[in-house]
Length: 69
Ligand SMILES: [Zn+2]
Image (cartoon, rainbow, N blue to C red; front, side, top):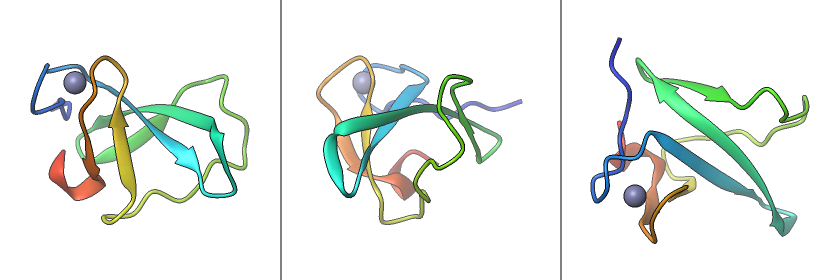
């Protein structure tokens, strides 16, 4: 299994923001290219596509989602 890592700090946890509420965030890991949201994320998590702004959970890195694949 390959886990996508932050290019800066190698953290495997990322999050995206709710497009309607920037204070609402959704944590996930990316395993074998599959997005795995945390268990405590409810059903209506946002769609993460290649151009979705993705944030590292551990450092200040953020970029488009396709940069971590
Ligand atoms: Zn990082």
